[in-house]
Length: 176
Image (cartoon, rainbow, N blue to C red; front, top):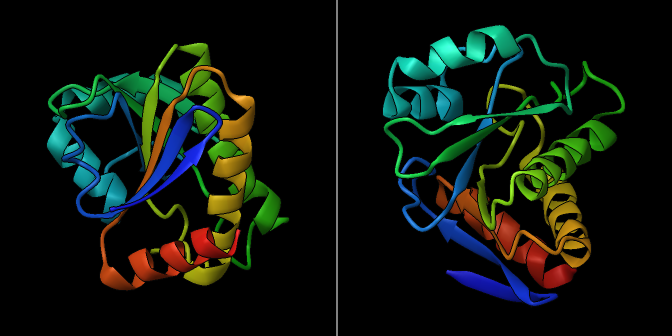
């Protein structure tokens, strides 16, 4: 684990499974617009949370790129899931602002609901095609900025599934 202290809280980077973050109140789902199960992070979160998640998501959909919504965590070890729709690279513009908006809106929802800890995947870097290095730069910068302004969220964690994504995020954290 890599850690940086931020304004009384901390930002962490770990390599692992986003569905198994027992010490985190809210995990972030890299969702699709309809908030349905799919591949990647969305599929893993829906499988782990159970079928009740689809039912709660149905009336909340569709969401737009950059938007975030909150649901219960059901069978996950986390009480909450924050679903964010990242931009499709080369299709949703401006990609950088929409991606930053995902992270800002997730932290805003956490703050509004008095959630003190949140775990993020690498939003938009899978099927949505965002280059990991570019996405990591935006993600790390945005989360660090939001943590300095946010009095509620005291722990943010990036949970990267693969070693390559972990190394890229670690390098971006060191550069900022």
